Image (tube, rainbow, N blue to C red; front, side, top):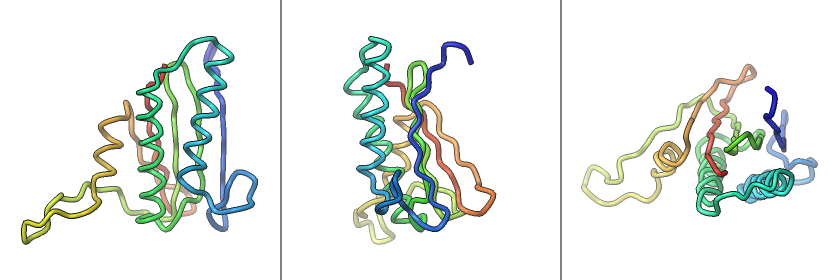
Length: 148
């Protein structure tokens, strides 16, 4: 699309979670660093400043997606970070075919549970959230967060 400049960072792992260079497992901090790098690069190239609070939202979304992939999805099998006109698009792939769900914050006895709030956070902060099945199994979750 004309005028749509994209910065792309990818980490794909057919045989397990790896970082961009394949040297170590992919961590939430790797995806956050890719977002910071892509957004800063885009801002420097265009001269358009990014919104610090919105960048924090994008980093939180990335943390939730990657942490959920590790805890509930059998591990991160890849990620993409793209900067579009006014937003950052982060995609995280994992091994599980199971759809994400929001957990009730209270158990059957009325006690507060830990965890279970990541998916609602992603859905609230992102402008667009999509879950796609992957051909070889697993899923890819893509979230778009406005930052400019």
